[in-house]
Length: 420
Image 1 (cartoon, rainbow, N blue to C red):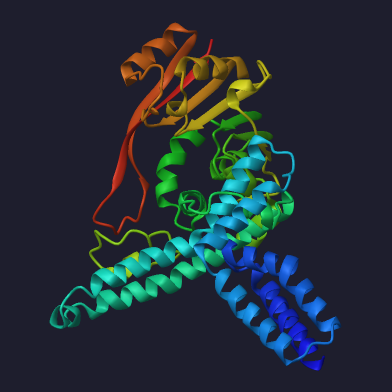
Image 2: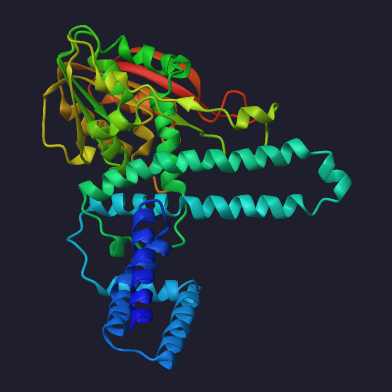
């Protein structure tokens, strides 16, 4: 009898330990913990309240060992996922579905990183001993990379925790999603935060300045495709700007940009955006370089700054007309499937005499109805009731470290035009 109660206490303490670590654990471990709650603890309780002899005690221990081994298997994980899919899910919306995908991507981050690091290690040890000794520093950098990935993971968990709470996402719901999700969504959040909110202003200044000069003294400004909102806050800080509506139709970007409490948590955090980029470094230490975020423009704007409202919205479905004094589009118009619809919608949003200022590439998507060249774009704009008052060109390194030997850069066009 006492032995049975001992087994119960052991299982309950193990279960409590699992719960304590659940928030930082993988989906698989969360699944095993959930199944422990559903089956193991009630079973142990049943055994405890029955008087058991030595034979029953042995059977209980054997069953526990078999159970412990079984729940570690891939088959068990597939079973957990099937069980999760049987439970009814909360009503879903497009934004919630995208946020759920982000949470699964973040949950998969540690496992994906581990697989990458393990593969790198296996390849390294295919070198002979002499070759290994000649690149000890390379191996040490790999180990340090792994440690820094854990810091990125901790940062991403803050975002996931906030999303789970705000959208009431349950653990079984997470388990019901594909467990082989890539970390692309998680990495995009890191890359966009670094691009929009890093303390290094140099690259952004080159992009923003040509736009900002056309937004001064415009009371109402629309910023479609605002991403994480940095441009919108820069516009709001300009003289004479009273209101800035920042539109974003990517749910994870909107969620972060519009979550003040989360931004407060993320402010002054250090991210490591180059950890998945193992090649093309002049100096190995540059791959491990951290970038500190500065979200003060969003959290503590100037007293006289205009009001910024971040809205989850399909730009083409906006109902306002003749409302804005200025529209600022950055890396935006080439995201259109039908660029003519974008230009016509921009025209509808602006008052007569309103200014549209644009800066960005013409890197159309794979399903664009028409891929206009710059001269064809200008021809259509001028023929549809606009007066182009300025044109310029530039080059922008869209992503990656300036210290890398490999750069992805766009040739970009800028223009400002007035609605006649």
